[in-house]
Amino acid sequence: MSFKEIKELRKARRLDEALEMANQALEAEPENIWNKRAAAWVYYDYLKKFSQPDSFDAFKENLIKIKDLQLPEDDKMVFDNSAWQIGSIVFKLQKQENVDYGKIDELFEIIKDFQFTKPSEAYTFIYKAFHKGYKNWSNYIAFADWWNFENFRSEDYLNEHFKGKIMNPIAQKAYIAYSKKLLEKIKFSNDTEQNPNHVNDKVATYIEELSSVIESRPNYTYLPYYKAKLLMETGDDEILSSSFLSFAQEKINEFWLWDLMADIHNKDQSIQFACYCKALSLKTKEDFLVKLREKFSKLLIHINMLSEAKAEIKLAIKAREKNGWNLTNNLRKWMNEDWYINTQENKDNQKLYAKHADKAEYLIYKNLPENLIAIEFVNTNKKIANYIIDKDNHGFFKYEGKIKSPKVGEIYYVRFRNETNGHNFIYTAKKAKDEAVLKALQFVKGEVKIIPPNNFGFVENCFIPKDLVSYNQLINGQIIQAQSILSYNKKKEEWNWKVFKIL
Image (cartoon, rainbow, N blue to C red; front, side, top):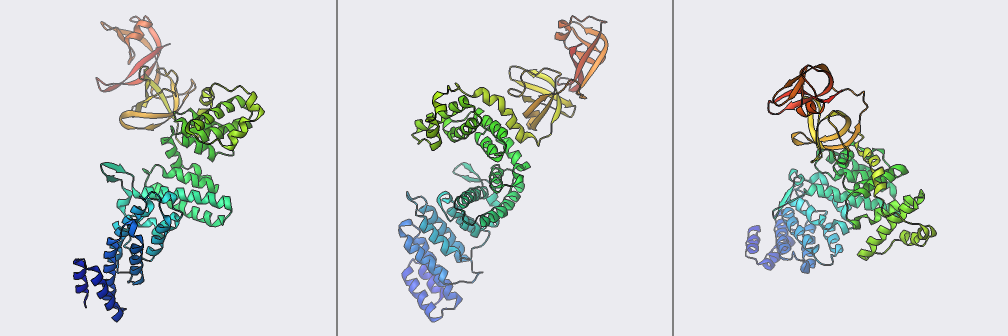
């Protein structure tokens, strides 16, 4: 009997004969490495044959037999090939209507001792398969700890392409999944008081790892969110780190961000209030807001804003009834209280939201520097304002919702994000005091010179638009004082000074 003969039987798909021959060889020389390898490959062929949910028991039996051979650590080929069959059956098990996570647990327990190549494509496939059902799998954290995220390949950090769609990297999905499951573990530990110190140690270690990924992969936008959630659970002061604030600045129009901000600032009632107002001021499907409205209602009742509270409660009840969801205990309780029965609710709380939302926004913009700018041009139809700081710093932004009616020459303190081709997204804008100084503005005094037939003018080296000449009825030789602003002439491709106000 030889390794070659067994291989030929395998190729001919005569597995029973190949297995019989392999067993005979093992009985004769149980420690012979070639006999072990021959048997392992026969069991591998059986894995391929039985890699379906309805033949799970046979699959598991052959997997155990590979394990029991106790192949050397450097004998990885059969394990790497088996990884594809293991992953395949795990995927299939999770496609069933009622997933049997007990079977997935059994497979995990067996492969813990397998010597896979790490990192490798096969090993990543193992992770992908078990990750698929992480939401409902109680052993996910144990599996992920065993698999070890340090074993992701460089390719695993890149977007994947599947059937014409771009998918998030598996590494990004892994860190999000682990964060979610760890948050569940924290909650369970707090609720049951089961070894909270062990959980806190695990959280602290994981946050260090997560922080490193956030720093190296800034495009993984949701990781700072989960870091903040974990820090909040541990009471860490680093919650509002720069990475989280950068993330928050990208998500300012998402209601859940402001719900999270309210949770983070749970010791400051006024900030919580502002965060709820900001969250509810955004355009969001009502079904998503029921829990948030209930949280805000609780705060409103506490500070005796009962008309506002009743308005929130009625909207929460309406959404729950529309979807056939049960009312919470709080909602039922409030509905039967005297204050609720006897209070006339507001029609809505939109004015309340608008009044307080700006205070919430400041929380995530305070780490950004304020820039002193001058308004250089205003397009009222498109709600766009051009601004200038100096010749090297200028651009434009949409001002609606930030500046009510900007006028040329006005100076503002603004926080914004630089984007492409001079366009900026403005976060905050506050009008500067009259004494604010900017190099892009200057006072000028001199003799007016009108240029016919277009009748624009100049004073010193400053251009006076013809509408300003006409409105102020300027004439040649007239001595005036004016304010001017640095402006770029696209036709001449040069900078000049332009009068915007006659004093």
